[in-house]
Image (cartoon, rainbow, N blue to C red; front, side, top):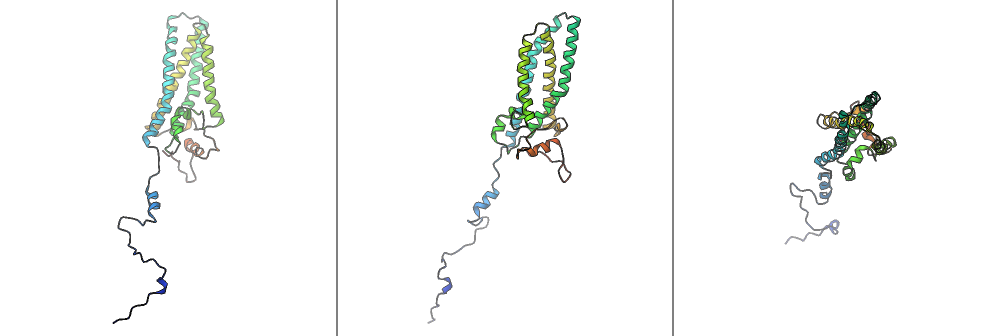
Length: 242
């Protein structure tokens, strides 16, 4: 009979559990969690939610300006039934020219900033920014001090001018309302036009405004550079990440 083979001392402490190679298509159990995490897509807001947030943020202001214009236009239309003096005609012309100037400057740039900030919303932003999109795009927060001053100052100006105009006598109240209607209609048209060019044609109004995010904000500061259309070190314009 053959002699029994002595056990190897080096294998005394080794486990006798047989090791089978992983089945084809499966990873080792030790690497499976890491592999699953690598293959798992990052939790992100769907693009449809981004579209809804932008529509909600800009649509709020479009609806507000449009409804205000329709309401004031009814009172301004009373001028057609009034006989104005030479001084009142001069006041009407001056008022219309003033608000046309405001529409072509202030409202133009204000509308561009709103569209640029709406375009800066991404899937990586917290849900609170999407929920309060009208305040976000208007610059009531997450903005520079100058932008927030303009945003809150505009609200105060509208409240004050509303009280002052309401106490004016006819036809001066209708004259001022006619100028305000021009400003509101222009703002509504600019918002709709810039939104169409940005989200349908891919040409944001970068030359007319800036997102005005704080430079100290690490998450949003880089979007100022993108929105302004400046180029990086490679000489190519950076695109907004959606």
